[in-house]
Length: 294
Picture 1: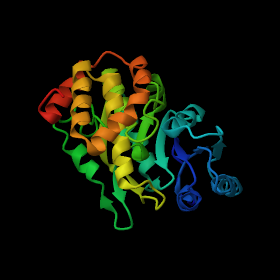
Picture 2 (picture 1 turned 180 degrees about the vertical axis):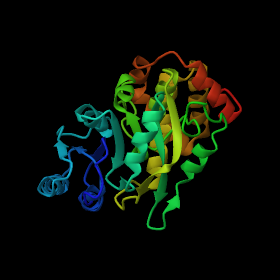
Picture 3 (picture 1 turned 90 degrees about the horizontal axis):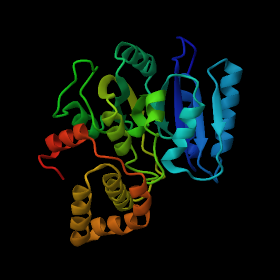
Picture 4 (picture 1 turned 135 degrees about the vertical axis):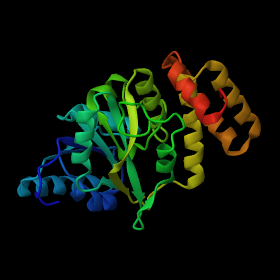
């Protein structure tokens, strides 16, 4: 990055673990200040981050700060980065993603003119071919439309690695939680922001790039993890009959669904302790989305 334009007043928060190779490629691309939270890496990740921090300092670029909690905190590591941020807006990125040049400055403009907006979901281009992430098409066609004071279609979900939040609104709903730990952690945050009256919108002209790391869990493992966390979120925020019915159905179905249920079981007590009254607005949107209550 060269200082050809003012740095955006948006902090980029990156949570990482054992992805030194990815960090070498993505860290130099970040505009604005950066906070990296290392989730107990055992490779050269910390050294890569420190070298980039020194490079930025020598070049007079916005600073990079490294936080080392000393263990793997999963998605909640991002909460540490948000708390450490000194800006009102925070852009999330993974170690294998980055925001396009000018995207954060554009996001600043959007947030400034839409005071109810708490979360902006950016357009995500995947891989060297820059293919549109299918989730973006889903967000763009949100069946409940677009609020009159929103900059784009209303959304009830987002990709954490390509989302920008108002710092205070994100922290007010507790950030990401350690019940789900990692994968699908966005769902509960989206529910709680919506329940609190904040707006979440997909904004097509705020662009992010995601080049999925070669260091990833097998697809079936990730599907089971997403299923586990979907159930845990349901027990935390959905009506109890909905959560119970989905859990029972998956248990009977067997396969990956049954493994997700069994994996969720040890965390169920914690999920119930974190439970809140279901939001009528969230449930209304889910009925529109699925055509049914469950």
